[in-house]
Image 1 (tube, rainbow, N blue to C red):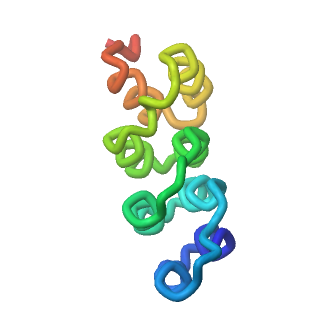
Image 2: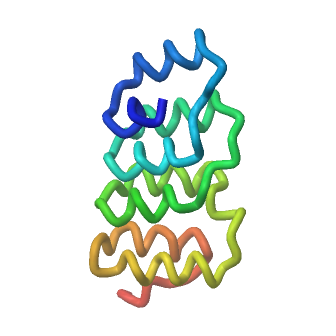
Amino acid sequence: MDGAAMNGHLSIIEFLHNHRHEGCTPRAIVHAAENGHLDIVQFLHENVDEEWPIDAVAAAGMHGHVDIVRYLCEHGFLFRSDDDVIVEMALALGDHCPEAKDLLLLMLGGDSGDN
């Protein structure tokens, strides 16, 4: 399932989810986020009982997938980390994807400093 998530094959993920019990590793959502597969990120989050890593937010942001960063933030991925980790992640994203950096800081109730 991890390979299907990485390569954007939602139909395969749905089939495996419905017909197999092996599941996937927590890296599946990171791979999907990194490669811009929002539909797969949504499916995994909604259908697979897993403790997903916050790394998915960073992976999406580092590759400019702001829609995925937004989805993950809106669905509680940041609440599993302390604010310092999130600020560090936002600052690391600054050069790669300023929009993702600003979104993370906004979710923390901060200011991006660009005003």
